View 1: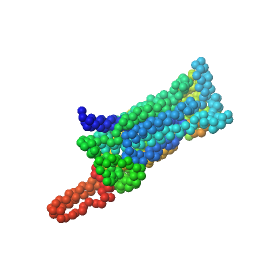
View 2: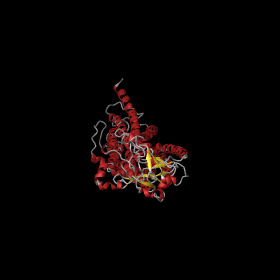
View 3: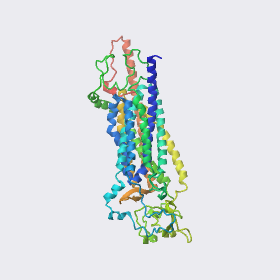
View 4: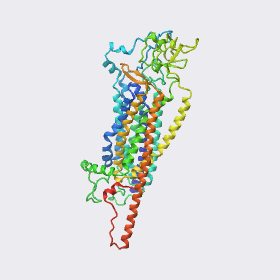
Length: 611
């Protein structure tokens, strides 16, 4: 084997390695992002924060993107793109591990409860809920200052989650603009769409595995391995339950770290597919990659060694390039369409797990516990707290906020098997002789919820399939609508604008509107309002779906507008090309005596590009 053929084979293998590495990194970033979305509810409960603040934490990923996307997209295109992607994977891994840190700094999770749960197996008739409800968190400040309590509880530890998610956003920044432009530079033009589809197909597996991991970790108790699970009186169906959210971030961090390794071994540039390398060792690669096309090379011969490009030379062309980009008649419409679409998608994916839990996991009745008043004649003598959430399910199918509010006089059993007896409020709506007992936890959901949930999931899968069908064509429209040397900048600016206005606000305003539908707020260990324990299912559904339908309707209208804009521009370019051909024929007929100028000035040409 000759040295030349060995080199060609090595470069071919490098391109295949790049495709495999890009597929893996798309999987890993989607894997980590989906797990973050699936852990929103667990994080909200662990730190006792409202949905609006969860929206801010979730939006920190986009803030991280915003900080560096413009610089990475423009200057990164002139540097070693694969290694920048590898560095990004390293930062993503660090961010994911940082997100898990609060678990190791905080104490054990103490869920709110209104009764003292004994674990003595020999105890009988050991709790008097109606009479023992005096020991409440409200009196905590009599022997412990609020500041000391909050420090012990680690109430500000959510900042680590915020910073970790921001780091993950910074690390993900180079992957899309630099990876896609690198692929488009060195692949056959007709193969770009196929390669993008392959990469995104593998990437689609990421959310599936991310949500599966989220489901698995949510069923593991948060302090697994450090507490006796027999002392835990709640299960994963309880709204106070917190799963092992931290465990998944360690797993995703390791996967992200592994995904970046191949990029450190890839070359800065490759020969374009299908083009042979020149026989002369001094001849440059036939492809003109966008890395070499940003700045003019004045008075350079092929034999002259390439000069290092200074930062000032890179920077002086930035604003002119930005001006050329936004003078393109199609690019702003693509940005606006993507912006509205991403608003809907981010809002949906952030709160979809909560939506499914609250709407399709709703107990059989919101019950007397929540609508207008919690107190009635049956529990007036119990001096019950109205703030605490320790739900019990009566045998009449009603859920009560606590054993005290159910008027329960005694209890038997221990741990999760505890049963409350002689509940006077239950007896008010039962015929004489019926069971007046209640058990820990909310009542089971409606029998028809399973059927509606399956229908909802079928529609969701169909919608995801239709949406995914437009992913690759959308990339191709963007890549073919702009000048070749502006590809990385265009992808970067799209990411910058869409992630800024489409990634940061939706979790915040979706979360704020969802908070308005809360029926019962929890109480923090140190006092004050905690996370929402139960939502009005109908109001939640109308708010959540109403926002999504409005945003997706606007997205479809913008796509239609974009289609007609592209068709109009293509006709204009076709007429221009036809006029140019006619002009050349006229020049030949007059033996060069006529000089017909049918080409517009350079600025007009910069605005247009064919698809």
